[in-house]
Image (cartoon, rainbow, N blue to C red; front, side, top):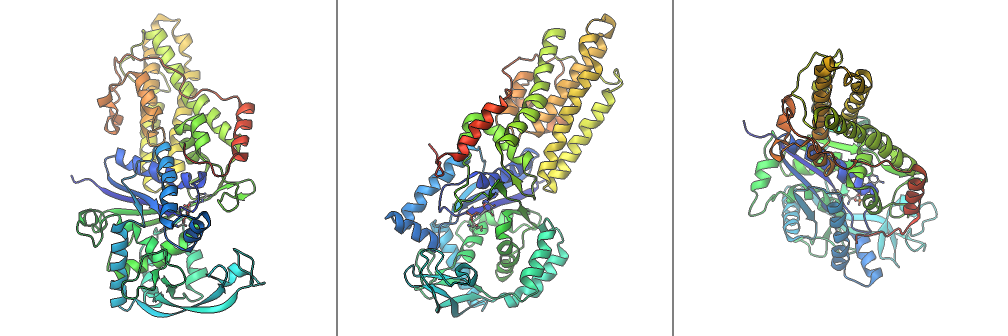
Length: 536
Ligand code: ME8
């Protein structure tokens, strides 16, 4: 049977400053989904990257006295180092200043011009002579002051190309109707229709002449492509669309059977759910299956953002607690699709309750007991001896099925919560069966063996299901279970006898328990630390 294909992307971030934990959140969630699919045998293409053009980058570079290219080159390194530290397994990292992207965007622009989907007109806005920048009504506020330098702005107009949205609105609404899962969560779709489409969608400005850090319009070189037409098309330029070698594009995007998912934050929903499907229609290309809008990682004083200066970097957390704990925190604490607040207390609580007390403890107890009662050898799996055995068996089967279904529906937080429930259940099973008491009665040897085999099986299953999060720790669990590397595959989940007779190796505690007071203080210090925390 041919492999099922799965394409997934993060937004391409602006390299205007260092990435913070909010960027790490979005990329980690996407990576967890991608790894989960890969592990289950899908052919996955996962892309992330950077959106490097625009006036803001040009100005930031000027302020530092370097070229925009030097500026983005430097910041791109910080993103790349963070993804390395977070162990993000992307298949491509696209930068919009790459030749492959520039050439394709120019071709796309020409195609749209030819089709009269793009036309030349004038952009009206509030202009700041000092900053040489156009601002919108909202940006200048009732006082009409430049948001950058505070000087008064004036109404002005500049020649610009526009994308003809009006031509595509009807088919967009039909597309929404035919594909109810396109925008997830659904509340976002109603917001798009009521706030943007119903009041009358304006044509979108797709070029500028007031700055030059962008992709030149070949037909009219004083224009650069304005940022969303440049940015959104990264999702296909990365695959080689309109390039000499477009085999990846043909293989992934052009196959209607490929599931295409964009993961984004709520701030950019409009661009991904209104303009992007329109652009694709102009190009005669298929639409994505889903745009998944995740929530924001907040700080107590509101949204974590570069401009607010309240952002925490992922680095000190990774250094102190390890990448698995940070990944686990992000997946479990911020339900995918809702907002979440970062606090030191919650971080420490997650690590202690879920990782040290629940998961780590199950491993520790199981391996110790197998050592003590069976000389380190996992007893052959048998079931039905203890009254709870079949309940554990059923729960394992149910957890695997729920994990797959929830992940396929992008209910990532819930999917992993199911695994943690199984782990809690196994800890309770220890209390219920009291192996220390069974060990005292030679007639209960079989019952004791069954408990050990069930516990080892729960550990194998849960470590396998958690592998997309536990990028280093799942293997540590397999090491302690003594499982050979060729058996560490998803396909072995259904084999209840996988661990029969294997010798365990007791190791270090997987997640040492944290001293809550000391660690909360340490994290609070990280939050107050240098805002421009960068990769070493
Ligand atoms: O908008 N919590 O780039 P950007 C969670 N270049 N996620 C957060 C976050 C937070 N506090 N802060 C940022 C752009 N994000 C465009 C995108 S795509 C074709 C072009 C994440 O650097 C979230 O996913 O402002 C958000 O949508 C994205 O970063 C915006 O990144």
